[in-house]
Length: 173
Image 1: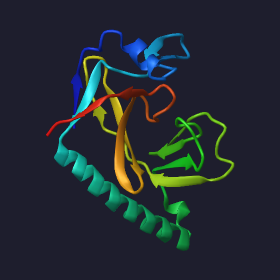
Image 2 (image 1 turned 180 degrees about the vertical axis):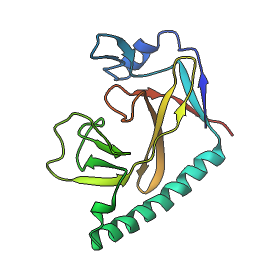
Image 3 (image 1 turned 90 degrees about the horizontal axis):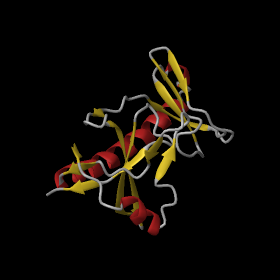
Image 4 (image 1 turned 60 degrees about the vertical axis):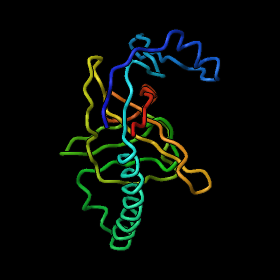
């Protein structure tokens, strides 16, 4: 997977707004306005990389189920050293806790009353760019059990939050 600089389309903001995206830009806490829909870069993946993602995702899902069963059935929660706690119901990274190397990070939010899911912490790779780049998170979904979509969001921080950018992608051969 590569991150490639690109020139935004002329009139991109009007185009995405006309298609129903009502928040093409985000106002940061410090007053800066940054694009949510980001066209100054895109990610390029090969078909082989997409196939590998699909296979790896299926393998990881099976491993996660087995690991969760192991931890729960043997009460091994205290053995987790570097982990992420995510609320079962949440949005935009809210209420996520990260514990790594003795450091604690908590993303503000009002979620978590329904419980948390825990996973081992694994730092996301950073993709550099002349615009600063970011950490990419790939999200995928199924329709009727079949792979149907891929979205890439990019964040400057550890958590893909409400300020993360949606970055286009290309599947290249």
